[in-house]
Image 1 (spheres, rainbow, N blue to C red):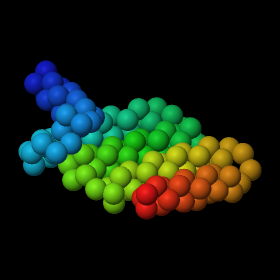
Image 2: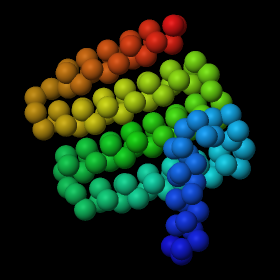
Image 3: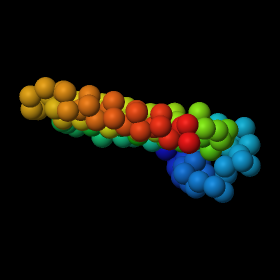
Image 4: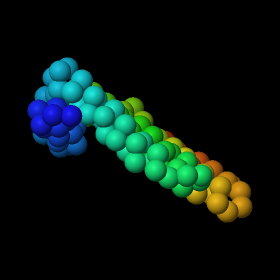
Length: 131
């Protein structure tokens, strides 16, 4: 990757995660650039997982996928702010945590604790949505 592409990705990442600076002023092009940078980051994160084996690789991949899903939900919430978008961010975070916890639980007995954490997080997100 040349310097220009790396710089473009870094700028887009900065835009994607800068919060209120882009909340209601993000153009469609900025949104698309930020989305591309999220996908690029996911690919980099997933590549790092390839050096691992077994359940460690599964945990790494679940973490990479979760980060991508959360980043996309947060981007949408910034691009089109709404209660529903905020709710989707909370659910994406809960599901990402669940997926990683589930993989970690593969190393120990059962997934019931991870499932309970997911259900609690979803309930809390739903309760926040109605306030």
